[in-house]
Amino acid sequence: MKSVKDIQVAGRRVMVRVDYNLPMDENLNISDDNRILQTLPLIEYLVQNRAKIILISHMGRPKGKVVTALSLKPAALRLSELLKQPVGFISDCIGTEVQKKVSELNDGDILLLENLRFHEGEKSGDPDFVKQLASLCDVYVNDAFAVSHRKEASIVALPGMINDSAAGFLLEKELLCYRDAVQNPVRPLVAVIGGAKVSSKLDALKNMLNHVNTLIIGGAMANTFLKSQGVDTGASLIEEDLVETAADIIIDARKKGVTLHLPVDLVFASSFDNSADKVTVGTGIDLSIDAGHVPEGWMALDIGGQTAQLFAYAISGAKTIVWNGPMGVFEMERFCDGTRVIAKAIAESAAFSVVGGGDTGLAAKVCGVENQVSYISTGGGAFLHLMEGKELPGARALEKC
Image 1 (cartoon, rainbow, N blue to C red):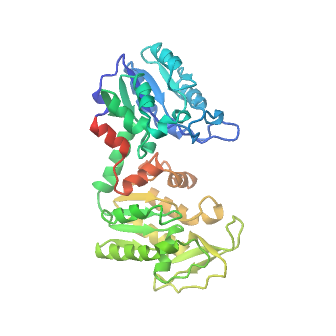
Image 2 (image 1 turned 180 degrees about the horizontal axis):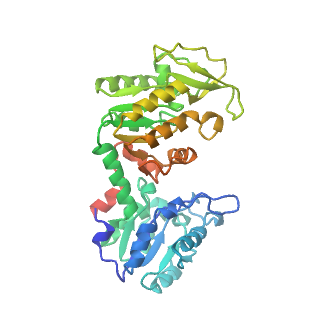
Image 3 (image 1 turned 30 degrees about the horizontal axis):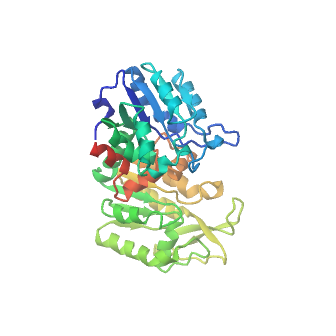
């Protein structure tokens, strides 16, 4: 695919697909502006090179209807503050008024259009909707990695309607980091996979076995793997229909020479509550640790201390680390210890470390290591899509151009 630096942008209308799907508080104030911050390098580059900049994004799930609470106007105001220059905003993304506003742009001006998803055409890929967007620009740039795994109009159809289409700095950076972490890593490569369900990461687990030297499995998804090995995890979350699949993954890892680590002890709680009683129980996976008795009705909400140290030791020998998914219910301080130990081990490692977005990025922030890892992805779903060995539709659309 082309890079934005391969295209002449001076004096031209450059439409940039960004991801300003921002978290908002109850007063509709932006609670985290990281997604805006990540786009500043590209926007500043375009300003310096005298482009006429048109930003497009979605926000939430309005299902083709105008929802005031999902307006992108707060994003325009915040972007203006960060750039220290005016950022225009218009309350639609297509139509006569939008065309007029775009025609009035001077070199270096910035205009953010209203939520693309206020029109059904963004989700459905309506050709007329795409045509109207395309008429607004001379150049298309995708800098929205976090939604490039989706097949929406502004991601896959729009670049094909414009002669000059390219990748923005953020999309390039994300793809490069993934390549260096998984496709062409410095070995040994250690993957730390956690989270709630095996089903949500089944394809990623299977694909990563083709790349990693060591696979560490934690979080609630580890319960299903433990059950496949005959371990009693009480009332913990288990996907019964995937127990056999989990056993197959363990066998496959062994066949491929991948070292696979499961929890040797777990922190059980009497209820899913930050103030619940808790106790650490051995799983028996490690023969040096006796399996303990799980109190009736209790559930595992974190990995135990010995597991955390075992995982940390495995991480210490890595040259490349991919982390996707917490080790427990890190949102509750009482069950954050396991995730905190793993986060610290990754931060202290000299390895190139890539952290998947979403909950994993939040976990890195909660554990205070967000500035100590090599890279935190801006897109949880898109990052997982790559881990599954799949191509991003947004990247493929640019390659076709």
